[in-house]
Image (cartoon, rainbow, N blue to C red; front, side, top):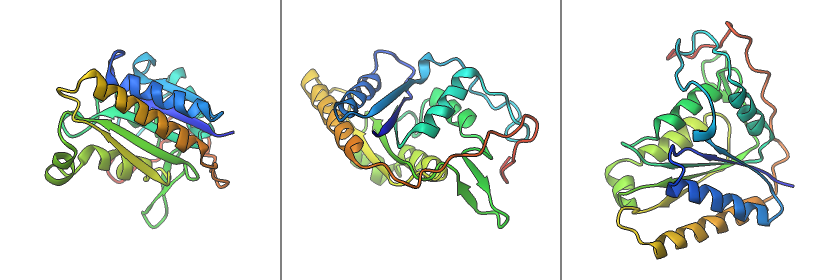
Length: 217
């Protein structure tokens, strides 16, 4: 049985992202997958890294559970709006706090990064008020690049697929219903793919006060 983790990164409970996350989860469950949905707005955690990566910051219980869900997952889905060419502060803070250095990634002796969450696949679903061509051609697709290249792949996840939903501004109920059905179908197809046999188990999180620092810390 496939284990799917859906991360809903929108702070609004009545958002399109929340509905898309629920539709994806429902589609995945139709295949018999075990699905966990993390609506970040419902978690209790401090999104700020108060000392950067210099000192390990104790994880709140909800973030400990989030790390366990990441370990269990065969497939990870991140649903987020595009805000100012990036992601909401809530999602950014979750990634900063949960993907700890020495747990989700580390640096080899030669200075190159090694992802410690290897053996998992992923999908990024972004909603946008701008047309897709505008994001890709004129804006450089910054949100997708941040999540796909600089976060998920950096932590070892392969293969990472991308789905863009938009333009949301001015869309009607018929269009939104079509998006929900499209994403439910993605959930069914993604969950039906066989899980990889090489799923890595990250090391135990660094002892407090002994965080592995990055060159940019």
